[in-house]
Image (cartoon, rainbow, N blue to C red; front, side, top):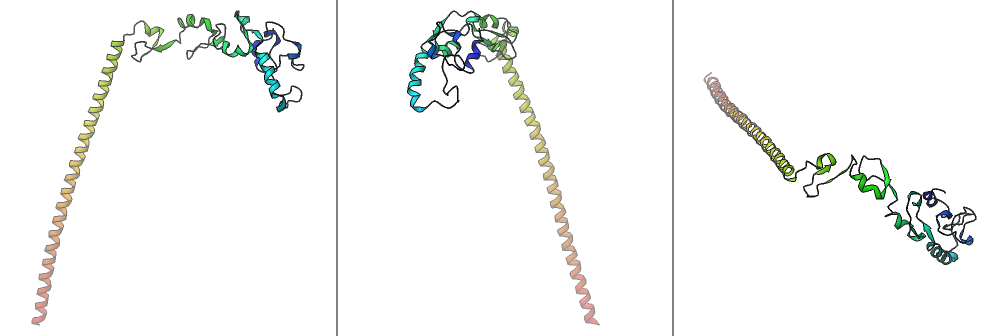
Length: 220
């Protein structure tokens, strides 16, 4: 029997999926599967618009045909309408699916998921008490919500104290820098005052010198 998954990828539905052999008129003469094409299997052109209603009616008839679950080869005993195939595959206990836990590469039947989860080394989930801790099989048995929350609280307190201490150190550095700037500004101001005084003395000396020179010229 062909792999049932392959019948969904191209051509018509695999005839072997059906509980009873479909009517010959419903079988494609090109791919030998039960009709489901939206294009002509010969020329690949879209079906003529005037035939859409006929195709719809035909599709409904085919959709009601009973098929075996594609997972029959894995043990599924169910038969169902072709139109229900997708919905059934989403819940079929014999559907082969990957383990949902990150890092695990196991492929298993849906019915075996719970049993697999009990020993999967990649299993993890948040604590069911709501503390937010993600648990593994190794940590689940010794996990204590109160202790965990207390550790987290103490860690936050230490972090807050460290931040506060860093801010205080930064503030002291800023205060020291501001004090140095004030001292430098004071020294600059003192220097400017001294320079002003020197300029005044120089101007006075220059005025006296000019007066003496003028008197001397008048006497001669």
